[in-house]
Length: 160
Image 1: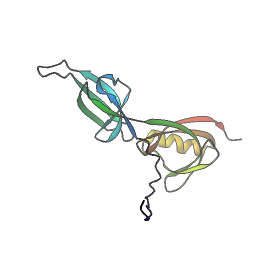
Image 2: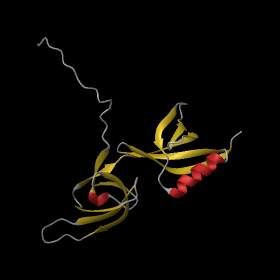
Image 3: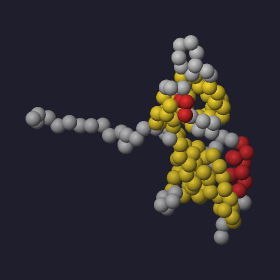
Image 4: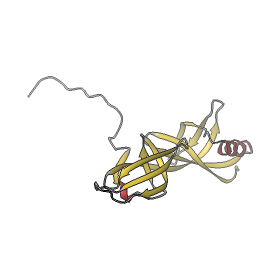
């Protein structure tokens, strides 16, 4: 046994992967897929026939779930693709700061203050108008691969 102590850098990560593998041939429209390192929602899938050298190929057209860019990828249908873990969580909106950040109430009563207002203009104006009118708003936050963004809004009535 050695007498020297080992020190490990803490990365504060449980080691859970941001993606999981799935065979390309089983991914369908409205599923999720990682293309060029970005989490995307599949909008179109077409499969070509097996050619002279074997593999049928899947052609994916997908839209980045955070910035809306269209991406394409062609993968042999027997190969694995990375599929992102996508979570949706509802939070109640407490406050909007001047610098574009929102203050949200989590289910366990804590606040979450590290999220920016969405870049989508219609959603942004709905949130600002509803908050300005004093409505109780619940925002849906989509998180995947270490990124988070507000993607939807629900009005649960006026504040009491």
